[in-house]
Length: 597
Image (tube, rainbow, N blue to C red; front, top):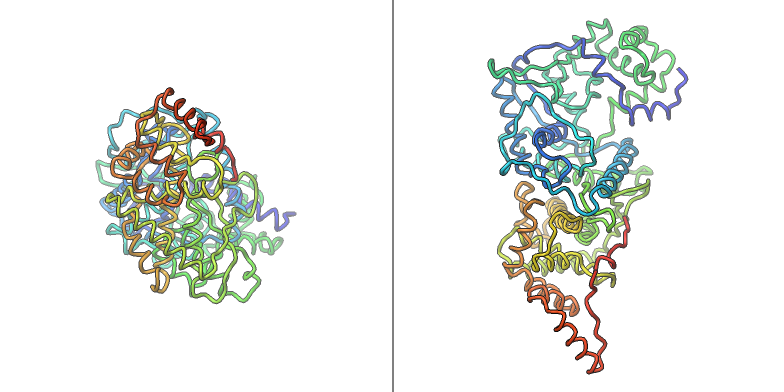
């Protein structure tokens, strides 16, 4: 075997173990799943539920994507059906920390998602699909369909907060006590659980077949499960580790890992050839160094130190990773102190020809990152945010606030929230107004262009809004980004010692809706109308009291549009009085086409 360490690493991280599941299918146990304990791979459950809920929708339209409420409800119903068929849900594990070895794979996935977004935009540049399915509302989801169709045309990215939405739903259900965000990857914890206690792991990741699952452990895959409704049984191929080892005459302790390594190193081997090599122990005899790397990468993945891992238990997975990574960097005595802290932000459906929708709410996340370091001896100067990415880079840098600015920014946020609550009583509208204000504030700070949020509000007020346009998608994405940034701030504050303004900020954020209650794209146009009718414009004027130019534009939104004759008369009047009239740009979009991904 003439593989270098680097070649093996690429094989492992980018290709997985080629065709492992397909090769092992003849050795799987078929038939009804007998009553037993089941351990669930949480992220895999979330994506399986998405595929079920999207099965009958038009996948090229973001308006057709299932709501977070439906996704959470379907996840619970799916687990309940498992229990009705005699299985016991023993535990549900979610990733709370991913090893640094996965960074190249994550970066490539992010670049790929960005390219797919650009492609989707290029095919719908005048507006996304207006097609709607004939469903009225969101009907009951078929939990065990005969098949799950795919989509070959360009389509929008999956819902940005899919995994935390399902996690939220599980935490608020009877499954809450057995649902955990771990200080590592979920699949490793699933494997350890069944190795110690027996049972089956429910997953979509064939790499779990490599793990030592013990004498009474096995794997079943979400897409393989069928319902025998007549007998109230679930039927699926069951990949039982010990039984497959016996059928292949390989050692139960190391034979499977030997065989998997042989296949990863030479994908052209048949399963029988790989099994024969594993019986002879060729992997250890000739490629010990490469095999050790395989074991480390697959079976002994990096996890957060136990001393800090418990901090992530009640956090969203990505926020958990941020917190654990920071604590690991600041508590280590190694060269990792020089490592940069990265935040992989959820991937939003925003307009590729505009600045990332995450940019508007950056001040909130800057405050959150700064508060994360509050009271710590070691502080970092920046956090690198990974969002839309076209090429490999270090991300978008966010500077950490000095300690005296943290209190100041907390006070500023509290003041703005207080002003909004004085005008707006609907908690859903509160955060929409804040997002619009942040868009205005950023535009004024840059001294460039015209706030897209105000342009959309103007179009809505005039009855000229195209709800399918990419500009609406951009503003909606900015609202989602603001909401999640506030959620991040709240979760980080809940980890801190409660003192000073932090207590008041936590109280102010108590009205943040859960993900399943947050507004949807399908309702966004109606939400903008409700905002205008509920005093949202007056609220924005109050927030922008020191921005006279913006106040004029906001006031104009609430007034009937003037005729061409009135505009001409006003321009002539201004010229007579010796004033230079600065008209509002007829096409603000021309000024907004800058892009700093």
